[in-house]
Length: 313
Image (cartoon, rainbow, N blue to C red):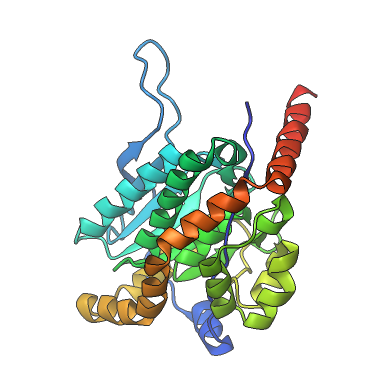
């Protein structure tokens, strides 16, 4: 059965001068075929059948091996995929030859579709455990010593927006072939935006933008997202061009001294991370409570029914 998903957040926009510096930064290394270092899937291998499509692959760029490329291959973000992503990110974190990570997907028109709606319907205990894993995915990216950038070639709703916001920089295509969209749409399915996501969204854009957009579950065009600082650069003609730019941009950021750079980023993000980590129990209890509310359950079941009808047609 095809799956649907939800949840998300937005990313911190640099000032106009910083955006201009991104656009003017020289390209440092040519893009080439990456070298696969590992791949994982939540499905078991069957020797009598073709190997299943992996959930996540991690590669090192052959011309710039200090840049790792994490690619998502599944639309719905299940609990198994969340655990695999945490495992893979920690492996990159401990590899001292890696200085930066580009996060992307190979999904058609989608960066990350978000949480599988089925996860909302598995009961409070199951969803609570799943939500802890989602928080940990965010934590390992947001607290990373690595330079991070999201190359978001398509729709980035809910969790897709969250993953982008966890990175230091976000890039999206603005016109080719069809622009993607981005935003936190929890309210649209009857679930309030968690406190820490509200605060991060307000910090990245502004509190006024948070007040205007989040209570409506508004989804933004690429241009709207760039105008409020959610996305850093959008004038790419193709996914390949954007990926090339992101790798070269990350190579440039990684020229700074490793220890000093990582410690400075740690200090910049320290206060938010402390609040985020200290509020885990309250956050899990709150989100679990509201997901179980009749309003949210009704909306989620309606969405699943609509999806089932589309699959039948």
